[in-house]
Length: 78
Image (cartoon, rainbow, N blue to C red):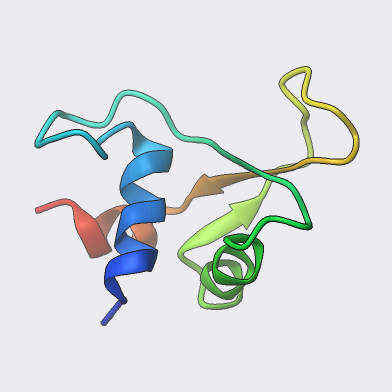
């Protein structure tokens, strides 16, 4: 699946790979609804590359929490 550089950056950030070629070590992305990235993240959800998480990890109620799906991981890893 083809993704934009911005989408790849968000997925890599969620996986902890945004600062180099490290192995993924986490899988979450915190994004407020008023963030400029929110629409991009929701687009990734619509395409099955990320999912909205129902747990909060202690994050405020005004913040959305996402994780990368296997399809999202495959789009940027290997």
